Structure formats: structure tokens, C-alpha cells
Length: 329
Ligand code: KG4
Ligand code: ZN
Image (tube, rainbow, N blue to C red; front, side):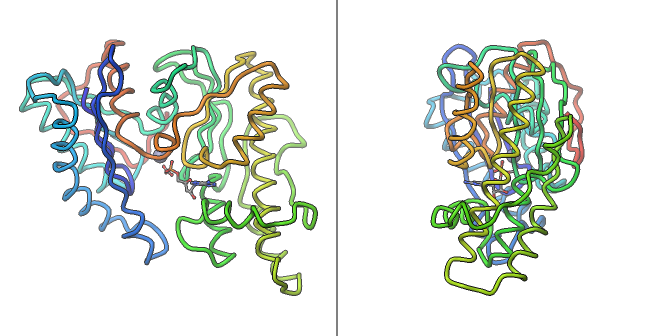
């Protein structure tokens, strides 16, 4: 199964074999290109995908030693994401499938993220709770099997990664701000400021992160500047996000009785979050599963895997090129 991901600012291509696992994968990140604009510029993203996708495809097929006639299906990210960017992968994927006479399957980007831990050994068994934390989404999902998803909670405003990025901007850090903020927070004093843990004092599994960014703003405004202010605010912010995510994950594990927690999406790369979730899961007698760091962020491997599982489960798609900017899982 060939997988193509072009929903945002990474071009990802991969080949996945149902029994042998991942054969090859390649990724081109546009992060450096968008950095000077402080965010992803959709038109530039689409144009760059157009230039990258076929060379990456050739590279992956060469690496795997796979010829076109050996490909049994093509999976591409059909949404959600930037429409122009999605259309690149959708058009290329659909065209290749047509030329090769194999089925094509449009994959939901978030399904790719939540199945990504199945690329690793040991893979989590179903059912599990998935925490998807990226720049565009914060979701808790009850995963009973392939295609059997129930949303337990989601962010009512900013996604966790978005909150990291916006707060990083307030702190004068570059784009994307999440990793930079996490680095700065390492030097911060955890005892200086305490930010709220939004929506943890009432039942439910929804999130709200926009208030934390405002909290950072008012703290910066109301505190006379000193050498460690930015680092201390970064630490308080990170601690609040991490603690909030941990509390909701613990609640989701208890409510579903699933025992297994899967974490995916870019914020899943955050080391303090990983430590907090590991500690919580151990205390709950459960286990946490992650994709390797490079598969936490956008990639083609998760799309190839999700497509293969979808096809094996009998998914079939019509001949149309599917691309949806907004699409609920
Ligand atoms: O999944 P992803 O690569 O892209 C999508 O949003 O689909 O996630 C990117 C997000 C960005 O908001 C980025 O700042 C955040 O993940 N991120 C982090 C870390 N690494 C990436 N946030 C906090 N700590 C990190 N170490
Ligand atoms: Zn993503």
C-alpha cells in the first residue's frame, strides 16, 4: 500500500506491507520555508507539495525495491487540512491508482494519527483510548477497532499545539513554537507561577486552552521583566497544558476501562507530557503507546497503514478525487 500525505506542511510518502510492515518512507518538511512568515502559507504549501511528491515517491519505491506492478493500493490523505495542499496528494494518489489499476482510498488525517502507534512493536491491542494532540486538533477518542471511533472529548477553542504556538509567539519564540517553548521551559522555575488547569474541576472530557495563552499574556504584562520571566512563564504554561491533558486522559481511561492509552500528534513529542502520562498510566495499572517521534508528526507511513487497514476491512471508494478541508472523524 502506497501512502501519500499532503494535508499541511509536510510531504510524506511511504510503502506499507500488511505482513512485513513498513517497507520505506520519506518526508519533506516545509517548516523552514514557512518560518519567515510565522505560519503556514497555504499557497506556498500546495506549490511545494507539487514539486516534492513525485521525487519522494521515486525515492521510496527505489528504497523498498518495489515496482509499480507490486503496489496493491494507494492511500492518500483526503482531509481535514488545507484544501489546495490536500488536492495535490489526492490528485496524484487517485491518478496513480487509476494508472496502475488498483483501488485508492481517501484516509482521514486524524485516523492516520490515531493508528500510527500500530506501526510500532509492541502495537497496542484494541480497544484503546487515543489522545490526538496536534496543531489543529485536541481529541480524546475511544477506539474499538479500525473505523470504530467515538469522540470522548475535544477542545472547544484552541488545539493544544496551537496554544503552544500562540504562547510561544507571545514569548518571542520562532515558529513552530511548541518545541522552542518546551526547550525554554526547561530553564524555568516551576514554583514561580501557577496557571489554571482549564475544565478539570467539572466532569467531562472536553478541553479549553485559549485561556492559558491569555493567562501567559497577562502574567507577562503584569510582572516586571527579569532574566527568567520568559522561561518561568513557559514552564508554568507547559505544566498547565501537560497536567490538564494528563487529568483528562486518566479520566478517559477510568471511564472506558480501556487500560491502554495511545498518544499521537505533534504535541505527543513533548517530553514532559510523555513523562506525566507514563507516571499516570503506571499508577492506573495501564500502559501508554507512542509512535516513534518522526511518526508523531505528519507522515506518509500512518496514511499507508490506515489505508491498508481500511482496504483490508473492505473499504471501497468511488472514482472521485476526495479532498475535504473540514471533515469530522
Ligand atoms: O501533528 P503535527 O505535526 O501537525 C498538525 O498539526 O497536524 O503537530 C504540530 C504541532 C505544533 O503546534 C507544534 O508546536 C507542536 O505540535 N509540537 C510541540 C512539540 N513538538 C511539536 N508542542 C509541544 N512540545 C513539543 N515538543
Ligand atoms: Zn497531523
